[in-house]
Image (cartoon, rainbow, N blue to C red; front, side):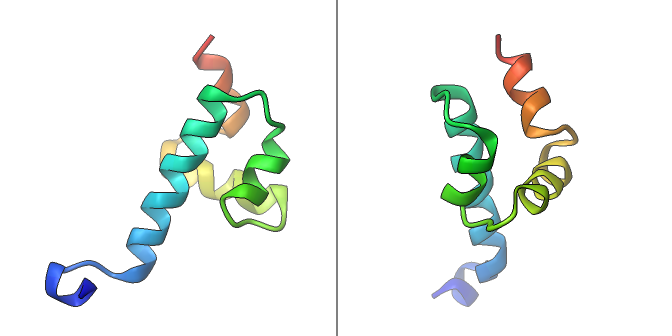
Length: 67
């Protein structure tokens, strides 16, 4: 079904992870390491690198920009 829509599984997974991470950073006080785990990353540094790639800032900077 993804091929019919022109989507790759990895693209869809990245979109879901990134949107969920933004939502958790905005709407919870959950530690960033726990958010990384919640969206599928076992290492906080790996999550932070991915978040920077997606949004050009760290999760900490993103959360701080919301306040």
